[in-house]
Structures are given as structure tokens and as C-alpha cells.
Image 1 (spheres, helix red, strand yellow):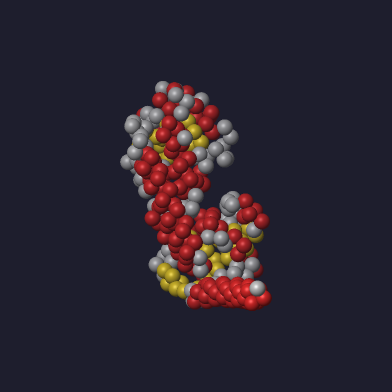
Image 2 (tube, helix red, strand yellow):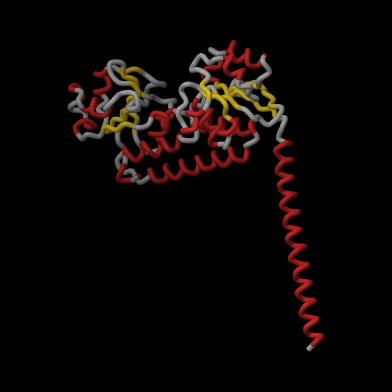
Length: 321
């Protein structure tokens, strides 16, 4: 009996040693993984990327302070988890809420001195305004700041490239790939659902109200979105953002009217419904006029797929609600 007791105590002792060894092994493994992760991040820099102007830009070290010159870049950076590194944004930035706490560096004409005073490692510029801001961007470069010009996205594929570019430049490639894949998956799900649309409707999208009425033609995100949900853009034979007279717009006889300027025109929907010249248009007769968030359907960032979904829900509520 005594021997049995000694044996039991010995067994407990051996098991305890095993547990301690396992814990030590797990902790060592955890530390090794963390060390490897840190080494991988460090190994990602310096990195050279081709910017939106086709020029090679080298980022020497992982950026710690970033200034964004355009809202779409800011949204991408936040989606990549870089919000804490953003020290300056444009006057036009409005999303996410945290941008209100960031320093403002100006609008189309950014404040070079202000940006330099923030001491950023990286400035995210944009190809859409790079030529007009050439001198200002050069001043930033002369001050020793790395400037990355992000491509001017005209399609979903272009947006994916923008996200991947910023991801590579900031050491967040894995997160960038995850965002892109999620966007692609969600967009395909919407397109698959749109196959249930039996009668495609004609849609007029108004991005600016009377007296200067502007709409979205081909080569815009809005046109791509309408195609994705099996809707017909009545201005789809036009290029870019054409201006229409009221008479020509009415002649297109849309089933649905979408406005995108409700954030600066009060009661936009009712104003459209009250237009005398439009009273016989199906969209007016059936009260099918809706306002959608302009940023979701025109800003080239991660929320574009939300824009597709918002359009789908108001145009085809029976399919997408």
C-alpha cells in the first residue's frame, strides 16, 4: 500500500512537470511567433511600389504618421487599421467619425506648411489632383516627406488596386487583401441576387439639381452599380458626368429617380416630385424618387459595395429587402 502511495505521488509529480514543460513550450512558441511577426513587418521595408502616375516610390520604413489629401484615401487607411497613424486630413473628410479629431490641411489647395509641421512619414496624394498640385507635392518631397500618389479609380478593379497599393506602402498587405476579397464576395452576392429581377427598370440618377442638372453616364461607379443590379441607366449612352436640360431628362421617362445631393439640398426628394414638367414621368406618378448617400456611390473606397446595396434596396425592394 505504501509503495502504491509513493507511485501515485510520483505520477502526480511527473504530470506536473509535463504541464510546466508544455506551458513553457507554448509560451516559447508564442514568443517565437510574435518575434517572427515583428521580423516580417520589419522585413516588409524598405518597399518600392509603383504609384498612380506610374512612378516608383520607395517607403524606407513603416510609416508612423500619415497625412491624407483626399477622403477616399482616408477611408481606405482607416479600413486598413491605420486610423491611429493619421495626423492630417482634408477639409472634405467626413468619414469615419474620428476624422473630426484630425488636423485639417486644406481642400483642393492643401496647406504645405501645415502638412510639414505635422511631420508625417507618408502623404497619401491622389492622381485626380496630382497635376494641379505638382508644385505643392514637390515641396513636400523636398522637405523629406514620402509622397504616394494613389491611382484615380474609375472602376471596382481600380479601387481594389488603390487598396492594395496603400496596403503595401503601409505594411498592411494582409488586411488589404482581406478587404478586397470581402468586397468582391459581397458584390458577387449582390449580382447573384439581381438575377431574380424579372423586369429591369429604367433609372435616372441626378447628381446635381436644376437649373444645372447633371447625371451619371458610362465610365462612372454609378453606372457600374446599376448594371450590377440589373437596372438600366437611362443616361448610359453618355460619357462621364453630362449636363442635361430638363426637357431632355424628362424625355428619358425613367421608372425610378435617384438623387445624390440630399446632404446639401433640403428636402431633395419632394423638390423633384413637385416639378411641374415631370408630372407625367412614371417615377413621379408612382412616387419612386429616392435620395442616396453620395459618398457611398461615388467615393472610390471600401464602402462602394454598400452603395450598390443601397441602390439595390430602393430600386428593387421586392428582391433586396
